[in-house]
Length: 136
Image 1 (tube, rainbow, N blue to C red):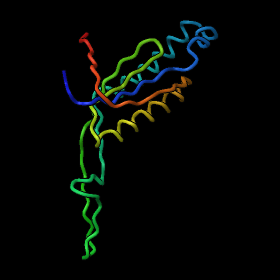
Image 2: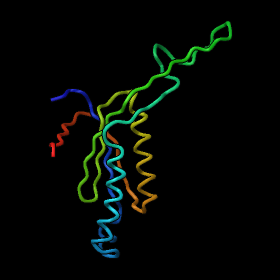
Image 3: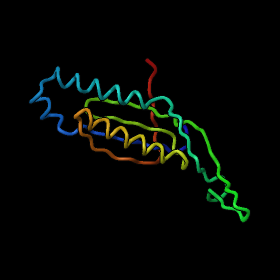
């Protein structure tokens, strides 16, 4: 088992029972399919560019001659997902550099769910986890 900590986001769609009663199963399933498509877009990898990465100390650095030193990085955030009923999980290996993009991705997901008319609530956690997705 991997000893690295994991960053996990858990989302829950609000009003599931009421939507089922008011919209019916077919309409609810169609809405959930749209939400699942959003979730699947976040899975796999996501390329991030950060124009002021702290390499060895805070950047940018301003030198006496007026020049500015800054770093840049290109890296991927490998995100996995699972969903069942009205619960959605997104997770990635924890890395202090990648936590901010992961949180940004969660905020994007939250907004897209609202745009689809599917309000969600959620939580983020970092710690030990065993996440196992079986191959289809």
